[in-house]
Structure formats: C-alpha cells, structure tokens
Length: 409
Image 1 (cartoon, rainbow, N blue to C red):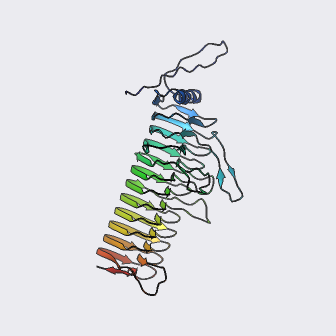
Image 2: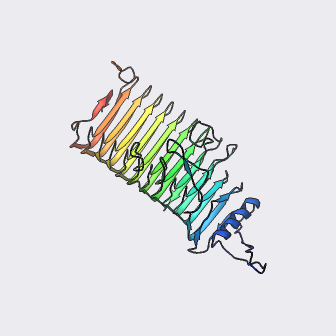
Image 3: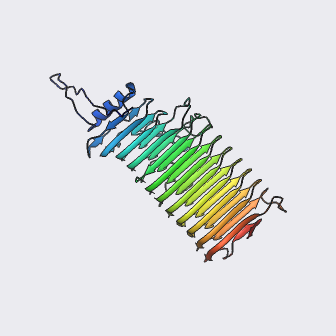
C-alpha cells in the first residue's frame, strides 16, 4: 500500500468562528492534530513537517496508533523545554511518564531530519505495550539530533516496571537503526539517564546498528543496551564517537558504551572506527550474566582517558568469550586498559593484532578465566591468547599481560 501523506486540516478556532487549512506541521497545534489524526486513522502512516519549522511544546505529544508511522522532519526543530516534568524520590531517581515525543505502540517508527532540543524530560520515548507479540518493532532514525534532554535522549522501553524492578516485558524484540545522527548533552537532570537507552525485557532480542553518529557529552552512559530475560544482544557501530559521557553522578560514574545482558542469551558486538574517549567510568563495558557467549570484534577503535577500565568484558555463567581486536588503542585508563574476565564454565579465545595498551594505572591487558574465582587449581580447559603486534608500555603493573588460566599461543 502506498504511503499516504497526512493532509492536515487543522481547525484553528478563530474569533469569528472560521477555520483555516494548513498543509504541513509547522507549530504545536498542527503537530498535536497530526498525531491525533494518526491515532484514530490507521491509513495515515506519514507526517510531514514544514521545512525548518520551529515548534515549542507546552506538553508531550503522544502517538498511540497501531500502524507503522514515519515522521519526515525536513530540518524542523522541536523544543521540549516545557513539555512534561519529573519528580525525584528519596534516592534521587527520577519518576515520570513524560517525553517530548511519546510513541505508545508496537508499530514500526521512522524519523528523518528532525531536531529535538532542550527537553524537560526525555527527547523521544517509545513504550512497547506489554501485550505486544508478533514481529519485532523496527525503529529507524536518520539525520536526527537529540540534544539537551534532562533525562534520556532516546529511550526505547520494553520494561513494565518504571524503575527496572522486574523482568516483565513484551514477547517481541527491538531492532534499532541509527544513521547520520547525534545525541549530545542529554541525561543532565537526574541520575542514570543516557544519550540512548534500550530496555528489553521478557523474550526477545536487541539488534542495533549505528552508523556515522555522535553520542557525546551525556550525563549517564552514551548508549546503554539493557537486556534481561531470554534474548540476545547484537550491536554493530561504525564511524561512531562515544566521548565525554558518564559525569552526572560522581558516586556512580557511567560509560561510553554499556551492554548488560542478564538471563540466557548471547552478546555479539562489532565496532569499526569507533572512539570512546574521556568517559568517566569505562569506555566500553560489556557484561553478560548466566548462560551465553560473548563475541566481540573491534577494528580501528580508540579508548583513552577513562576513570576505570578502558575496555571491560565480563562473562559470568556458562559461556565462552571470543575476541578479535585489530588496530585497537587503550590508553590512560584509571584501571586496566583492556580487562577480560570469564567466570564459570567457559573459556577465552582471544586474538590481539596491532593492539596498543599504554599508560594505564594497572595492567595494559588483563585476561582471567575462572571456574570459581579464587580457585586453587583450574578445572576447565585453559583459554588461549594469540598475539600479533602487542604494545604495552607505561602501565602501572608492568608491561606483560596479566593472565590467569589463559596462555599465549
């Protein structure tokens, strides 16, 4: 079926009682009307903004339709400074259902050439209904800029509990594609809010591709992928910056790129031409708990000047860790430059080619494999580390790899 461009016939109530028709979204009233029409007419699947329109919101704008929807921004700017609010509990955690643009749907969402700025809460919030089933939701952002949100810049939420208190969520997974976009200076109004946050619960995977995108200067993590329940995480980043994130909460600093996978499921990550510099905790932080493998490929990746580890990969439970690093630099870390831990039944298979780990406070490279941490004698098969051109210098614990039950091949 051909896309039907919504033709807006906003009934602007004038003093004389007349109406005026407009063609495209150009102000708050026409944006509210466009969303309202799409909510009740399932044949509407495209909303077009006037070129370079500037729209100030006084409240969140909410989409509740079940159909796929596309927003063609044409360079429009949505200012959400007055759209919604949040409260803080005794632990200084924010509670709100608000965002500037809210999508309560399992339909696919595409947003192109749209700027969302100065949001009082979240920039874009996508709530997946708990009863959603069938195909995964597909979310695509191209040439989208989300800046200066008090809470998350982009939040995709499949979690039925507001404070992540349980694993309840829908049966579907999340597919996210981002290109030529930026998420800058978000998460500066409360603890633990990120540039991009994906919460997936229940059965279902997270699949993410991010290309040519800037994710910098956010108060929480630059990007956090949080998967709990049965499901995998698959993330590919190409030509991406994840710099200067994680500063908001000095008692619990955050990362450039953070993946948390709990429950049965694998984690597969590919980073190409990625920079993760000056993040306040780790630059890249991957944690997999319970049964599942971790596979990480890094090529032309630079991580430097972190408060904690530069690159940290941790697998706990039954599962292996497979690493392929090529042209990777980890420098000036507050802990180890590269730290890999496998705890439980599993082993490490790693290859480092043209890798440099210099001037880190502890080890340049540390890899430890445990059946039970602190064991006197290792029971599982030893892990293997293949090295082709590894440079270690200026590290606080010396310039040899720190290894436990991992042998250089």
